[in-house]
Length: 523
Image 1 (spheres, rainbow, N blue to C red):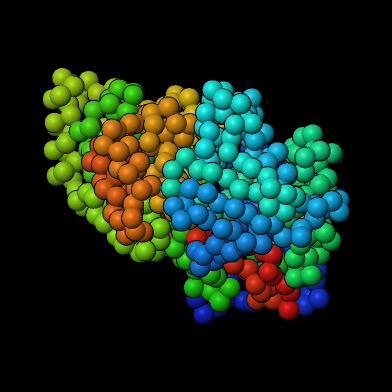
Image 2 (image 1 turned 90 degrees about the horizontal axis):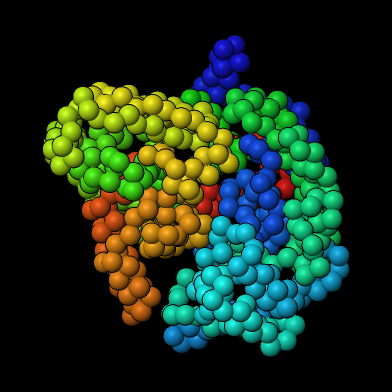
């Protein structure tokens, strides 16, 4: 409590004290992570903490910039065929950290290994646009039939199943990064010593810290001005902010190093705070294969009982946007479409009445419910507020279950839950990053178990759209179909917030919420 009061005073508007005695000649950057990365293999990556570390160690063909544009990284140029069914990649003169050239053969090896049936990857679908990629993953064809063709060490091309204008955006995500062909196990920190990114792994003390050292062979190493990066494993959000105040951390924020949500009102207006809209949405996910959420009216009752503005004002407190659809406006050229009416007591009770009637239930007979969530301060407080709103509006008691990330995701992948609190963060800068997970009922990340033929038709048709506007219109029509069935209930769209000391310059947050430190330096 004492620490809380001190921090509040430090960040009060008008009385924020700038850190003292920060060296202007430092070459080591101190950051934090909420937990140890679950993997260092880019192809197996699926969580933001692992992704943040992998982005230091590896790089890919393209990179997402802070303004949402795509720049070239290992690719020197990319050529798309007229119908966007073939992409040719010409590589830079880039080297692995052992001095060997990064070649087209490395991409062929890494991608085909990722697409082999025995390789465990949650994001293999990122390469499914490539002809025969999905069939290979399912074991129906050999990986040699995947349409990846090497012309020479510096050039390769892929043929796609259908036209795809956003494929270069997908390639900016870590899953598509290559690994050195002789790496036996990228997760063996004693042997994984060959990297393509700005840094190499120097040391890793589990549950304590990770030390990264500048990679002298990185293709752009002359513009990397930070020699070493120390990543401290800090689970507690209050401790993260305290370490920042003591100058022991240089930058905090985003999902990997969160700022305590109850202190956001005190820090968001400080001179060291930066905030921007993010391509993320938080939802209530319903398992529609589980009673009673197999009933649409019951789903609607729980959705309309959520007072979104109350959550934004009293829990989130960073001017987030209420969500009326699943796709954040930042992925739709800032367009806001209200697929559902405003939440209301009357609507919630109306649909509850209809649902109970259809299920031949009374409120007294309503089954016990368990609402699960990933354990963090913010998620816990959101879950508690939702529990209170549902009790107040619907008269239904909900039990809460907070879980660690591995246990939580295990429940979702196995669909062993009734309903849950879940955020989707875009993994590439396009609406399909949200929409693709709901195309097929057996999709690995289709946690709701929902499928719809009209939705599938609209998604399929969008690939042959004759203009970008026609494509966006088709994707919005698909979003409308999903929202009419409500397998997930959108609550709010995300806004990113981070703090960095004034002597650290060049930090940037991209629209997916990832912080980029490759252009930063101390002054």
